[in-house]
Every structure is written in C-alpha cells, then in structure tokens.
Length: 268
Image 1 (cartoon, rainbow, N blue to C red):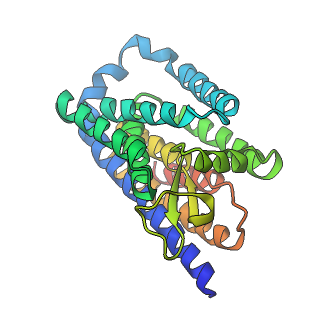
Image 2 (cartoon, rainbow, N blue to C red; image 1 turned 120 degrees about the horizontal axis):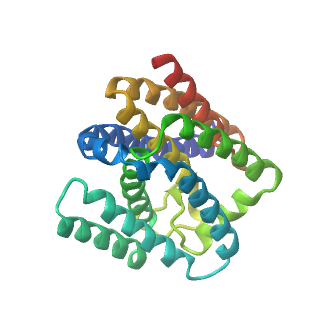
C-alpha cells in the first residue's frame, strides 16, 4: 500500500474509533438513564414527538443550506453544541458541573480552534444529544429516519453534491460539523483546513447511529444494543474500505443504517 493511502486509512480508522467510542458510551449511559426516561416516555405529551423530530431535521437542513456561507454559523453551531452538552450532562451530574464542561469545551473550540478541540466538542455533543433524543423516540420511527437520511445522503453526495460542498464550507469557515484527522506531519493542535486534513467524517454519521443505539437500549436491553452495535461496525469497515478507494468522498450513512437495521432485526 502506498504511504499516502496508508496514512489516509490510518486517519479514517482514528475517526472511526472515535465514533465507536461514542456508540459504546451511548449504550452504557442510556442504560443508566433508563429509570428517568421510563417516566417521561409514558406521558401523553410524548405522542407527537416523532413529527417534531422530523420537523427538527428538516429545519436543520434548511438552516444549513441558507446559512452555509454566513460567517456567524460557526458560532451558532458551537453554542448549540454547548447547550446540548449542558442538557445531556445534567442527566448524570450536577448542573454547575454540566455548565462548566459545556463552557470549557465551547471556549476551547472557539478560541483554540484545532483538530483536537473541534473533534472533542463534536464528540461530547453527539454523546449528550444522542442519549436525550434516542430515549424519547420509538425504534420503528427511527428506522424510517435512518432510511430516509440514507437516501438523502446518496443524493447529497453523488447527485446534487450538496454534502461535499457543505463539508468544504464547514472546514473553511470553522464550523464544527465534521470530525477531522490531520495530514501526515501535521499536529492535532494545528488549525484544520482542507489542505492539511487526511480524512473527514460527518457528525451525522456518528450521531444517527448513536440515537438508534440509545433507543434500542431503552426499549430492549444492553445485550441487544451491542448486537445492533456489531452491525454498525460492519458498516464502518465497509465505509473505510470504500473511502480509501474513492478519494472524493462517499455517503457513509447507507452502510451504517443497513448494518444497524439488519443486526437489530436479527437480535430482536
């Protein structure tokens, strides 16, 4: 294997391992949060929430499309992630500790922007958000969401090219929407750019599987969740192999969703 391809594979694996760590923590923490959400899930007000989630996804996509060229989008996304971290962390620790964690990660990412600070803010926000969302929605609905967004991912990458353009703009304007791995001889403490990045991974490719794994943990058990998690690992392996060969980028969600859904149906 050529050195450049070998380093790209290594970088992709680093990002994939980061995502896998989030998935494992999501399962473990979701199990700990189960008693709290047993109460809220049974309330009548929760019945309309699947529609609310679809609306939230639609609004998020529209906002990203409209604001993708605006300089303040990076600050908006960073603040949103800090709020998500505060909300999710408050389920497990005291509010003041949650606030301190959220503010520290926000300041680190905004004022010491680097590969490390960018990835750290995103990963913690994904973990916190996946637990609060995943424990609030039924699995069958989330399967529909996974399928819908997989189709959107294919169109966005190969047909409209919206997703690659959005990824490029996100990196250029310091918007924390992608996990980034530095190129060879580039420090993790250096400011990320397309020219010094060896690999990129969209936050949604970690977030959506994490939400699904959280929901499975809530509705079934940790055992079934880890079997479902194994399906996601197969998707990660297939995506990594394809990404090394296709340098222009691939839609990661279809393989991940397929692995998750098949493994869940087998485990159930």
